[in-house]
Length: 253
Length: 334
Image (cartoon, rainbow over all chains, first blue to last red):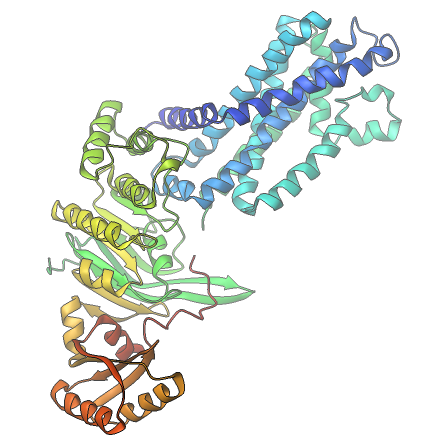
């Protein structure tokens, strides 16, 4: 059995699982739309001011939301691996000859797909309210966002296996999510921030994605900010996948 | 069934060892286990909770690393070629393993394909197993809607989807009602008759007795006795009296002590209101026990003599009853 076929089979299992959980689908869509509905209007007052010199505040804010969604859509993976440890599914799959990396990748790819679809929806919804997406820039942005989702999905899934308790996982995930989100400049651009915060932001991988997302929204693809984002996130994603595969390999020892 | 072929046997282990760290201290869960299971056997590993049954099974099924010793499954070295072993075994663990959001059929199809079957082969085999294990009425419903017995049948089907040479089952009938349990036994016997070697762990005497054609009784990670259920029971010889009375607890204990002192009685234990008396000479024991009960004017509810049970074997080898052993064992089963 080739690795590609295994991955495709395990991906399909995860997609079917998602389709049967309308609650997940609803939850995945509701928070970005709530940000658009209940947070973006607050930014209108800042239009034209510092940090919002673009055509529309949504041009600054929507790319940030997509990065936020990328982070969130991978973070749920650990909840499911805890259930799969408890019900023995993971044990059964690890007794099979299937590749451990394929086991991991089934979930990771599902999470990436389940980032891209709602992200496109958010973009479409934002257009009538003044968002001006750049087509090529959007494609590259979704690629960066996919790296974030793959990274968080792998880390969360592996943490689920290691921690085995929903409470511990929730503490770690939410404990990471808030500082990473605040430091990345998702909600308000970091050009408004004091310099110590900007310095600190450089240890936050999300910061690079948010910076790149705003450049990309202007249609500028071949520039250093985008390159840096790919380099940083590419390396971190590769490391996360490698570490998580090791956790799957030793899963139940 | 009884032919043992070391080289081509289904499962074989030599001096198998495994330790876990419990609170910073290494605790040996399996300490030098030797097993030989021939192809075509239904082999049972019987022992109390914490005896090392599950740990042994998980080592043989490649789930946890082997600390020491050698093991082969289907003729393949478990330590050196775990992936080769995985292709040849089925495994139904204590956690069971059905994917609950998926339907039974989807579970089976994925399982088949992960073991290398083509789509059409897997679908043919799935239909076959749905028929064989009577999953037809609910095969296309999500597994989370199944009853306990239905789910266990699906999980056995998952274990044999790829026609493994050896099927490992960890406490297969735990949590099943008597009817589902005996259905499961019938199905396992059927699989065995069709050529699958079955290796199961159990702490149920009845299960070991009814299902296994050969047994190893283990305690504290070591084999204490091995043979067919009949051989093991014959080795103990004699039988067990069960005396049921309505006596209050203090008097019952008093009676137990008195009976234990009778010459033909080799051991007496209390099991609720029932006194279990071990004897190697039934004829002499009948007379002596009846005489004492009569002399003490004990209000008798029932008196029965049964042949030696596997519990008697365990009692003889370890000095404890299997029913009591493992109750206060601090070690997690894992």
